[in-house]
Length: 386
Image (tube, rainbow, N blue to C red):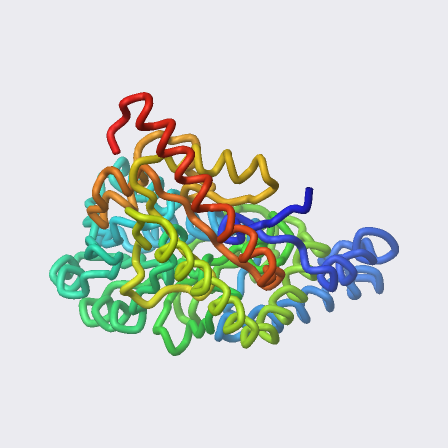
């Protein structure tokens, strides 16, 4: 049975070129990048080169890049660093549809005695900019907004959000984790003071990521230790991972035009679903979305049942964020979008990638109508709410 992987928003396969770039840094070039001899200098030079590669993808200067273990660490560094840096400002503004990593930090912020405002979205998942402007106060330390939602794929107007934040004197953080490698990212043009990403979302190695800290912004390090990363993150550099991240960033930037083909495949899948399956919704279809993401609600079935039936046929999809799977309730994203319960319960996320083929999409499109019909029959026999 051939694998059809349609869960690229959860993680991606390591790019073969990134893997080959990493290989020698595990073996013969194993030096500590902080060491003062030739073997160490080799590693330090590799880190410098990778910093330039990722800066080109992010749209910042190499000096603004702090390498981390991934998006979660980067977000922790940003939130906790801002909390410590601005003791007179204890207000936070974010959105109701942020990733669970941000939601956890909002809870942490409140537990420290701070206040937080959640800005809502409309039925298509679009950010309410008027509500955002009303939420930001003179004592707001940080406005944190995702570039694109990990479930719906809906993109946010980050440049407008940045202007609102800066007009009130707040720092602006962009979680660019899902956008990276799918659409152009430009931290400088966006007005980001801070920007986070994870390497494994764009064919880099797991356990790698970065926090972009705009020149002039001073945050205390989250990881205390040595003087690595210009004193902004202690600990011996993960040279193989950083090299792999750099190569993946270089490849992602070069392959951005290929996302037009992916968009075409995504759109073709949605056309087939809407034409051949009754009582179905594409969440966020009316909004500007990532080109690879389709969040589909099938009324009368459980999304988990659709996911499991597809998995039996070697097709990998998700019922939402990989960081919140196992939760029986509709996700906080669907609740914020006020998706009707029958469609929310039956929601499945298809997230395509550069390796997705037309034949694979045809296979899924041909399989879905019968699969959903069978599940609806079972649900009807059990008297479940359709």
